[in-house]
Length: 164
Image (tube, rainbow, N blue to C red; front, top):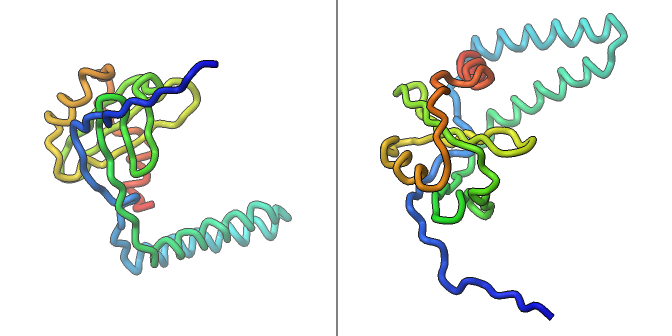
């Protein structure tokens, strides 16, 4: 019968920082009025065309944004270690990560991105006040850097532009 052995030495953490789980955006009253009008028009369109599922989705999305506005984001601890990247209680081994890239255009964009093997969506990690050169130096021994990606992903740019 094979025995299972665990490594008694914990993995060495190279770099650690904390960031909010999502950015708390300052939205003006005009933002809420504008998107409220858009939501009402979409809701009425769904009702008048008999597409009640669409109308329900519009109401659901509006409720999520209203609830999120009053909720404060939790802090997430991110760590780069010799065997994986870690977020709080979740660990992703290096073998599951395809590559990384850093977009650093302060003050707007300061993000670290990971692309995974398979069908998993990319992971965006805000760099906060971390030195991007130190983060890059900590990652290079473990995974490849994608030097061709120089632009922010379209979905992130749209979300930042419309404060979504």
